[in-house]
Amino acid sequence: MIKEIAAIVPALDSNRYSPEGDLLKFAGTTLLEWKISQLLKVFEKKDVYVSTPSEQIAALAKEAGVKVVLRGKETHISDMIRNSSFGIDKKYLLWTNTTSPFIGPKHYQAMIKSFFSLDKDMYDSLVTALRMNEYFFFQGFPLNGNR
Image (cartoon, rainbow, N blue to C red; front, top):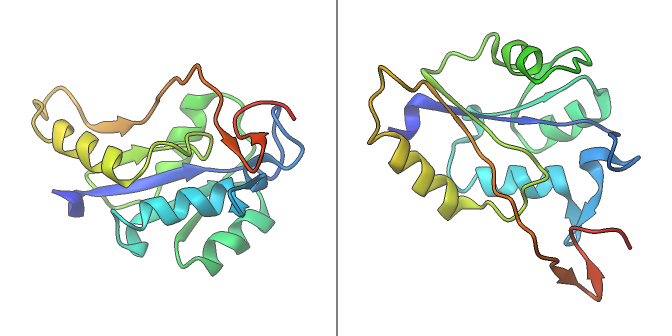
């Protein structure tokens, strides 16, 4: 089941939320490194991809041992997803963002289990999303809000 899935993490070195983008510090690391570490508890390195137009992020992903998809700076999500999936030889894709640091290994495993219980004629991919309307603090600072 898990062998049929590749995980894709889109990443930018700056975005509308932060000049540091997905390299923003989080719990002693960066959002990107945190997400990669979560995914590697579920997937093999060869099945985790970071999709980015950034050479800096590509280098960090390679250092972590995961694969890189260099893409353009698309602004429409459907273009980004399509261009990120070229060359990935898996039946299913799990698209997940660094900005969901509280979606972790147990959540991915539960989603995958649920996904594989669905009719595959109707569904062919996974997208993770979790809206949180709470603030989480680490060392006296909010993790998901302005300082």
